[in-house]
Length: 429
Image 1: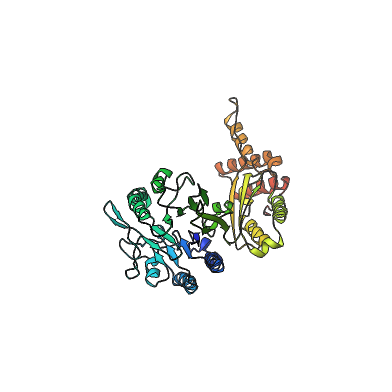
Image 2: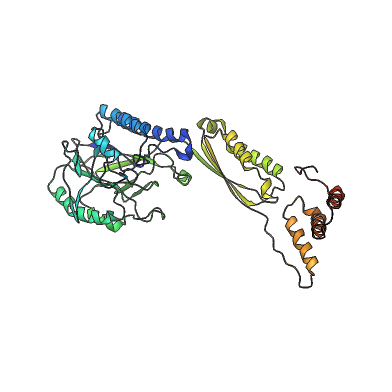
């Protein structure tokens, strides 16, 4: 007797990324697409490996979204089997979670072992109490649940190993999937409290398919460990993992191996990342012109129709004063060129670097003039007249120290500025 199921994780309903309403709706659209796929493929079950929600405290509209889609699956006769992720857990100890609430309504089956001290008990799902560690579906699929336990997960798995092997020896369902919200060591360095392969090896022979969640990067190991990744893009770093989505799994116990898993890319809004080097441009105007040409080469009408999220990183050494770089204006260029639903401009530029290397023979006055001239030369446009600007600043300093009358200061400024060629963008005096 064969079975089919979808395995997904990290839906994160309710995430209003960048405080952008469109992004809030995107996470619901991604889940809606998954639900429609389950119905279209007529699967026997949908397995959710944690983090259905993004926050422990839900807005009513987020709960409404989840209830509506889960009700759609129930009406189609497709059971949803879930475990709690770290984002789903209740805010306070022993308080019910929103997944418990959905389980009480009969919209999903929430699995977890019973923990008493160091002892782990695996009991079958009881429809009356809405509790249990595993469920046997009519299609021949057994699903065992292990929610997020953080650093305690390896210990819990060690305690689960013997009961799982006992269940397998007793017969029943011919195919067993472990649904667990836990990361695997070595996939992403920033995740703490992850499992090692040694933590999972004692489960071999008792578990046919390990359905992971928690880490948003997809991977498959040994046709045994499966992690689908996030449905939508929770951070710009995830944009590089294009194969994120869910698994469609076909089970036929007479085969070896008994299952075949197909990774399917989820439907989500495009995230585009670009890097633009600023070093070659001697003024903000020339930089803007080059940036517009660069952006036009990257976009198309098809991309604009999808209204992507765009990240642009400005890199390199500026050849002019950083204060003249109008970041808001550049961000608007990006938004307009791509029709982006959101644009993130990262200014990673650095001012022109220089080293002041005076000689030991310089007098104090010579040293002061030298340093001022070097500072002014950092702006490539003022570099040709840096000596005149330095002389003007030193003359102004001298008049101030001598407490000369304001009329004399004004006369000095008028005379000096008449000799210095103004730059485009400089205020008129």
